[in-house]
Image (cartoon, rainbow, N blue to C red):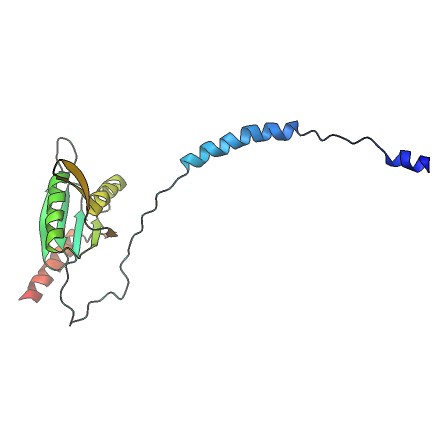
Amino acid sequence: MKRIRKNRMQETVELNITAFLNLMVILVPFLLITAVFSRMTVLELNLPSLDAKQKENEEIKLQLQVRITENSLIIQDAILGQMKEVARNPESGEFNWNIFADVLIEIKTRFPQEKNISLLMDPAVKYRTMIEVMDHVRYAEVVQVATLELVELFPNVSIGDAPKEEQAGEVDAAVTEEAK
């Protein structure tokens, strides 16, 4: 029996995990660094449905739109037409965001329950311009009693293509004829 016990009693072999630990020492900081840079911001957009026709017995609502061109922002109502145009400053290349915000705040005071707005963009408009307009349409900074407050304007943003100039003229003419 002693022989059997001797055969069974063998030296335990140590696991060499230094290579694995070296890999973890390099891999863990790498994953932590890349995880910080992979954050994404998601904005929810409300796209118009295909059968979003108004019923005849409903009262007419404000259908606020901002038509974005390379050189101007045109604030308009889908039914009434253009309300205000904010031109791009030729020297700085920026829009006058204060005038733009003042017009939107005035519209919001007249229609406080309205939260929807549509951005209609020309194909030549840059992505950065679209994001800037979206930021200024959703919130405005208002100074009240020496404090700066963020005021919610139109948080539900829809995006679409702007009608071409010929189509826009035809639509305006049709709306004018219907009003008569």
